[in-house]
Image (cartoon, rainbow, N blue to C red):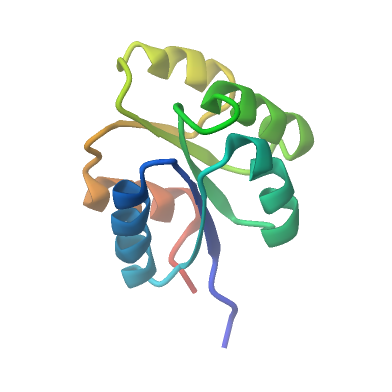
Length: 123
């Protein structure tokens, strides 16, 4: 049996992180969460996720800075940005290498579908 693909959800809104984690786990993925922007890069190195779901507003450091750090170190790691901020930010994040952009409250079915498009099914 193949190992489950890993998703790291980075969001300081506990409700969104928990609900997203449940939906993504139901789709067959192994899910981890992190709320502190300062700790994301260490968590990425530790977990070695197949994909990151990243909020813009985080504790410690903003999501754009986190995205730049992730892409500098692991340019092929897909990152989907989810935020309650203006959708016009999507262009900035896309230029920085985001593989998707969802405005909160995010359509979790669409989020899972985008994850599947990027990395395949959970197994």
